[in-house]
Length: 107
Image 1 (cartoon, rainbow, N blue to C red):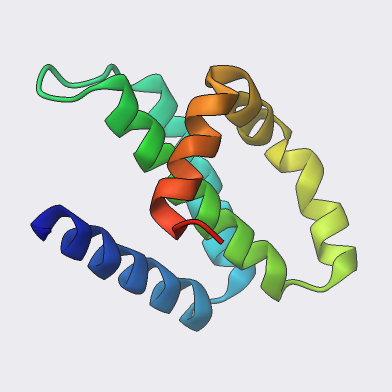
Image 2 (image 1 turned 180 degrees about the vertical axis):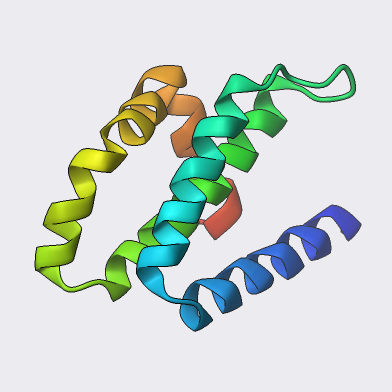
């Protein structure tokens, strides 16, 4: 129960940030952060599943920033995000997809 409450609280904070800061700045910051995140080893107290959840959390933030941008800016930014988005598909697509469902809840 506590873990669910923590997840809901962090989702609320992420969503608040994604709606209040400049979307181009947020997109670039989150993309850079995720690239750095992927270069770090999994901590000894961590797990691949927790890493996938954290990565999915960041991908959702990227999506929220993209939704706030005009189409021409999205077209300009997508090539810069190619590596990040490709990594999301190649790490473990099923794990990332399952993590996104865990974070957002079933529809």
